[in-house]
Amino acid sequence: MKAAIDVEAAFGDMRTWTMSAIIARRARLSGTHTFLRNLPDGRTYSYEDLERETNGLAHAFREIGIGYKDHVAVMFENCPEQVLSHFALGTLGAATVPINTAAKGQLLSYYLQHADCTSVIISESLIEELLRVAPTLPLLKHVIVLGIRPLPGTGSVPCPSASTRSRPAAQATRPSRAPRGSATSPTCSIRRGRPGPPRPS
Image 1: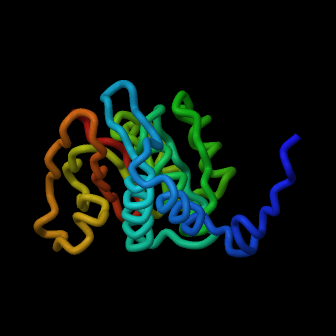
Image 2: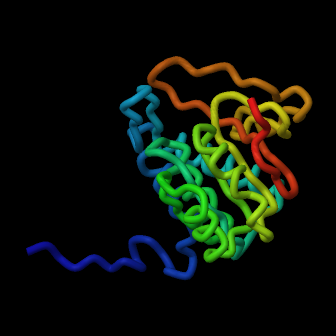
């Protein structure tokens, strides 16, 4: 039988167990060990990548205006951006609201209204569904599209990580796609203010 673990002796005072502290500790302990591998495109994230990318996204979200206790919807297919967004919002103390990607129209509007969401972080493939119901969401302030490339009509900058945080936004336009098998910082395409419906193509 294994001996009982003194949790506080091993991990410190529970009151210090913030998201950022837990991720930082794991990055120190596990470093370059694999945290996440995305099978569809081969992207791999180490625990060091997790800390860097989480801090970068949290910084970008904070600059937009997302903060403590804000209700933020997260709407992605299974992908690294979904995981990183949850950790970044936890770092800020924001309330994460996972939204089913199959939700559309009135159901999507109901989910976002009922959860009092003021921001939505969403994948590029789902943005059109959100824009269709945006006029029915009086609390919505920001729509943040995470993807590889900026979207037209948005303030688009790579989410700052250790390698991009010091770059002026005017120079941070289209990040190059990382080689297969390596992590890459997503781009935040930010629609400020109340978004309107999608334009006809």
